[in-house]
Length: 603
Image 1 (tube, rainbow, N blue to C red):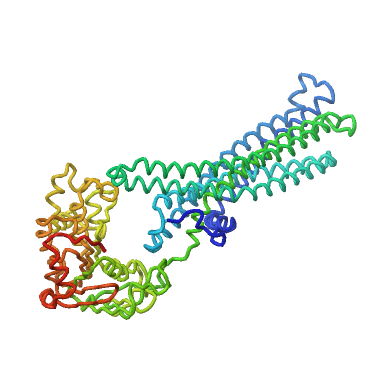
Image 2: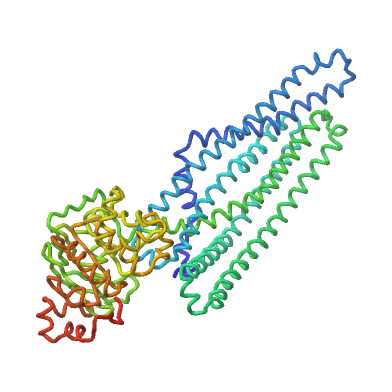
C-alpha cells in the first residue's frame, strides 16, 4: 500500500495545482463569487468604518461646544439617519455575504465531488488494488472540506483583512499622513513575515495529512476484515498497528502545533509595535499634531479593528495551510493519468455474434520485473456462441485473461477483439454492458437484494427480478427472509452466506442477459445440491451465448463445448472433456485429483 514515505518529491503537487483545481469550479459561479466579495466589502465598510466615521463627526461637534436641547436633532439629524442607514446596510451586506458564501461553496463542492468520483471510478483496477478504500474516502472528504475552508477563509477573513487595510489607509491618509506611513510599513512587515512562516509550515501540514490518511486506511482495513481479526484473535495486533498510526498522527500534529505557535509569537510582536505607535499618536496627537478629537476616535477604532483583523491573519494562514495539506493527496490522484482510458470519441461496442479473439498478446503487470510476463505472444480464438472452460493451476493466467477481455487492465502488445472490434478502441462502459461477469467473490452493494439483482438492468420489473432469482435457485431463501427482496444485504453482502451471495450474483447475470458471459469460479461457494440445481440454469443462460467459464471444480466445465488448459500463460491442452481425459495430460491429472470437491489452488 502507498505510504507517505513512498511519495517522492517529484510526485508532490504544488500548491498552485490545488488552487487551480479549486479555482476551476469557483469561476463557474463567478456572479455569486463576485457578489460575495462586494457584500463583504460593504459589510466591513459600513459597520467597521462607516459607524466610527460618523461617530467621529459627532465627537467633533460635541467637542466644539455645548448644544442646546432643541438643537440636538437639527444638529445631529443627518448623522443619526446616517448611522441608522449604515447599520441597516451593514447587516444586509452581512446576510448577503453569508448567502453568497454558502451558495458558491455548495455548488462548487457538488462539482468537486463529481470530479473526484468520476476520477476514482474511471481509474483502473491496478490503481484501486494499490490503495486503501478507506484512505480514498478520507482523502475525498478532506479535499472537499479543504475547499470549504479556503472559501470561508477568503470571504470571511482575507477580503475583510484586505478591506480593513485599504479603508484604514484611505480614510486616514489625508488626516494623519505620518501615522499612515508608519502603519503601512508595519503592515507590510507583518504580511511578509506571516507569508514566510506560512511557507515553512506548509510541508508540515502535508505530513500531518498523510499521517491521518494512513490511520484512516488502517482503521478501514481492520474494520473491513473484522471477521478475520476476530477469528484469529488478533485484536491486539490490529490495535498495535492502529496505535502506531495514531502516534504518527500525534507526532505530526505536534510538529505543526509548535511551528504554528512560533509563527504566532512573531506576528504578535509586530501587533504590539503597531499598538504602541497608535498609543503614541492617540495620547499626543492633539498636542503635537493638532489632530481633532473625532479623528483620534477614528484612528483608534480603525487601527484597533485592523489589528484584530490582522491577528486573525495567523489563524487564517494556519487554516489555509491545513486545507492545502489536506487536499494534497487527492490532488496527486486527480493529476494521475488514467491507466485504462477511452480514446477521444470512442464508439460503442456492438456485438452481433460474440466471437472473441486474443491476438498475439503480451502482458505484464505494472509492478512486475522486466521480462516477467503473464502472457507472451498468446493466441486464443473463441468462435461466436462457443462455451469454453479455462482451467489450470493457480497463477496460470485464467483470471487475468478475463480482466483483459473486460479491459480492466490493458495489454502491452497485441489486441483483444470482439466481433473484430478492438476492445481498446471502444467505450469501456459499452464493452462491459455486453459482458455479464460473475466473479469468484460476489460483488454486492450495501443495498436491497432487489437492487443488487437489478444492478445490471435498473429498469427491470419486479417480475423479471423474481424470475432471475428463481432461475439462480435464490428465490427460496429470499422469500424466507423477513423483508424478502427488500432485505439489506450489508456491506459486501455480509448478512448473507457465501452461497447466497453467489446466487444473488448469478441472478444478476441472468437478468443482465448479455451476449457474452464470464464466470470466474461462479459456483465455487455452492454446495453440491445447489450446484446441481444451478448448473441447469447456467446451461440455459449460456445457450446461444459466448461463455468463458473459469473453474477449479472441473465438473462445472466438463460439459462445455471446449476446455482450454493454461499453464504459466501458455495453452498446454485444448479440446473437449473426453479427449483431454484420453490424452492423460495436465487436465486428466487435475480431474483424477478431484472427487467432486474443490481443489486447494485458487486463481
